[in-house]
Image 1 (cartoon, rainbow, N blue to C red):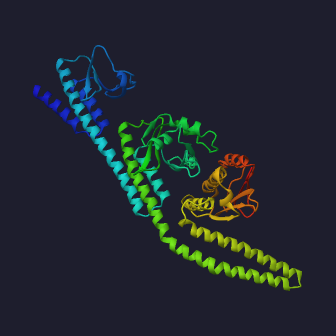
Image 2 (image 1 turned 60 degrees about the vertical axis):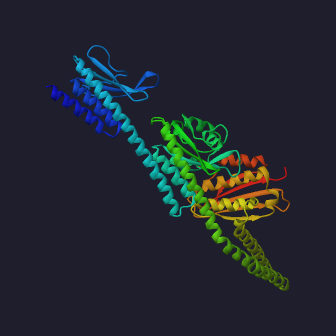
Image 3 (image 1 turned 45 degrees about the vertical axis):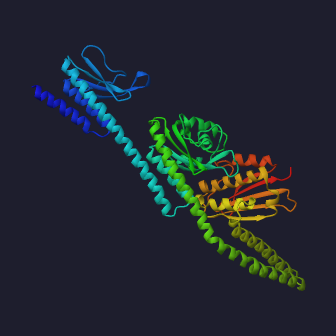
Length: 509
């Protein structure tokens, strides 16, 4: 009899030790405790800080039984602790008619074996988590080797972080091009499409988790993230998802390559999910360090691709300037002379129209020449910023918008008005990407001859939005920017299809 009982204890210990996952270890421990002591009911409760009891695992609960908030006590109850090297993990309790001293000894032996199995399960889970993060880092590297551009790489980083961290959303925020004290969420990865409306959201460096992570270079962990985000974005003009306040546990980790701060990686969970642990914070930080190197490599690869085409662009620009423009100019002069020779008014008017068309063509060719030569000139004026913004929006739009200029932009569009112009163009292109379904778009920026009035026109050929549309995200902010410079904003449907956004500012006020 004693030998059979000892074999039962040995089988119970071996069964508990054989499990690799923590939930299975706890379940097997409760079942074995009940069987060894011939108890009616078994319970295992985790001990939380402050000696509070956490989740309960049960075995043998009768039909209709409701789990109590605390462990049972009193006669017919036997409870032993489950200890780990640094702390008490939980309490193992069985309930029956009567228990002997042998039952207590066996329950203590089972609890000791469970403690060792819990440690092993924890190591196993940590190994699995590290392996998942390692695989995610590998996927980012593979994406780079496959030639993904920077925008696609950022989305890969955010999405893999979200999936591996079992989070509700992942995002990457980069420094704002127009505001040195702000970050812009360039990429958002989430299974909930309504959160894509937050792409382009701006957050200050001060007073936000992402800003603090970027400024200090250290991970920042917060709770109730959604409530803070909802308050911060309340007046942004963005269409805030109604579930944003349900976002809770969040980790903001800086993306740092060497000494360069590239941005911030954010992962966040809904309120009913398990909050992030310290171990998960470390894993996200390690992944972010690898991702930052990947992003820096993507930037370098983008620069390399640009360098490859610089020489060819320069050759094309020289040919356009030295041959095409000169020929067009000569044709225009010839037409003007021909118009003066004719005695028929209708012919003269038609020739004058051709001359005007040639003048516009020459202006477009000059803009094309500037566009071809601009990438070799780093950090130029507002023209350079607009061309770079158009190029960078290709991934978001699926095409590169056409850009044209007229007037002394670089001379008079400087300082705060330059920042508002660039921010307006960014928001306009973001609306085209989100709502227009367009296949082409154009950006026209003009300053009159007196340098007093700045005009921006953004058109697309999609379904578009108007000022009265419920989807016209951010138009209130654009109007405020125009009014700041005594200008106007209009958004209207184009007769040929699509939308036309016109934004103006008075310079020198």
